[in-house]
Image (cartoon, rainbow, N blue to C red; front, side):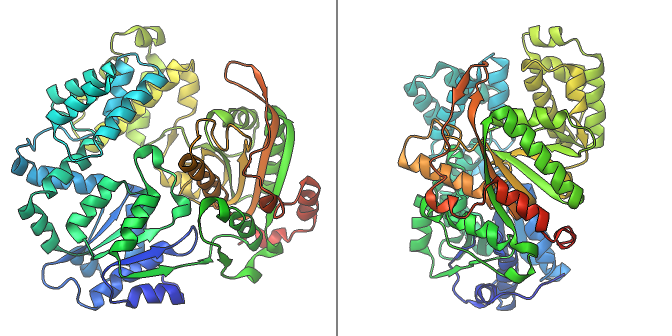
Length: 562
């Protein structure tokens, strides 16, 4: 089903500028605009003959989303014959398989089917800090177009012996990781004849979520579609610096490349009151002030509130009561309870787990397909935990137990590998097989996108999603912003994480914080409210008394159906 395009979306569709930047904050119709952009280019004959338009995304979910939007505007033949929708890892894998030999690489090397580096860190018995250090070293070095020999030299010079051993093992086993794929793709595209082939094949390129690009990924796109690329996204949603993304640097390069910039500033997602709170963060995020596309259609105008608590436990109990009240009025709606990090959310996890009659979805649990769930539950039902944890190679022990190596289908192998890694992680945290089995859900990731009830998740997991109600918990110094964020760049990204969490909300937004929060070791720390709770943001938020009054007078029958 199509909707009436906005003036900005029509401008994006009809512009004959091949290079374009679309600034589109959350809820402003970005996916629709990109589908219209592709439609406009095809109608103008941009991809004539055998040429195609390349649409690059960052995830399978985003790939499916844009493909679904394209079906509303293109014929089946156009989508099949004229458009290639692919995520960045898929694009890099295609380049590697087809052209690795052109630069002396072996195309038969194993493509990544899970987080191989993390798996080797687990096998080596490295703790969280050691594993993070290994990942950081390898990621940083592989962001540049260097060959395997140079990678080894640079890792050795860095002085991290764990990273060096893991990289040597990777080369011996002829294994590619998710950091190796784009590195190889850039090296391949440095060959003029290969780059010319792709430039000739793809008449134009569309990139979804430009703010998540690493400089390396931007260079890959430029090799294929320099001056012929449409970039869409929003700086205020640039929250993946830990993966190598450089939003400001990428934005500056794109601005110098494109010939047209279009801003979409009308939000179709959030109520006017929620938008006022999100807009109050613009001075911190360097984002865009948004207006509500249809303010009169939001029953009671929406809600934005703050609630301070003495302890993290009392905060959790209050949030449970709030969720039960919302669902009593609007039982089919979705409530996102979001924390900057999972450990700060543990009080909420425990409080909701103690409740009966509430539909709870924990986003960091595995959502497994039927066959994988059956296999993992069988393993959990008969495993000897002590034997697993005492094994020289706990991952291989689990894989043998689950008969992993008898599975031939790559997708099934990937699903089981991820699931067994998740099981091992929970076992090392002290959970029992019975507790883990209870946390397994059967379905696919779309289950999380449609189910009513309470959704427990972290800030990064919620990006790209929306909930009828959002409760951002743990808004204290040390959590938001995270205590490790010291630089101006890091603090900017932390403000953007908060903005992303808040902008998931449709009808209502509640920000909570506690004065006393226990650490993982049990020691209780006094906490101050986050510095991001500025006077400007506080002015948009009602207190708990105002929240209660709003609940008592709100048009719940209308809210429940909007």
